Length: 75
Image (cartoon, rainbow, N blue to C red; front, side):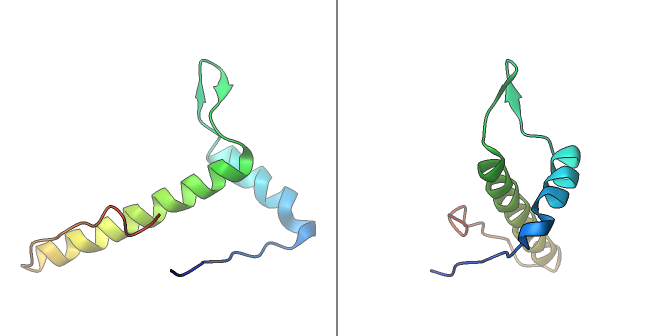
């Protein structure tokens, strides 16, 4: 398995959180946050990677190859 590590300098964490959470607030259900900030960041990154993966597979399909999606490509 491959681990992807994203390093954020300590003095930039609050700045990153400010922008990220403004653009992509933590989802709430009945006013209750569904994730911690870290959990939400990980969920969001995984969703974006999966979206990009599927988009690429769709491009391949338009080139004449039937796409096969592996929903477990990201755990």
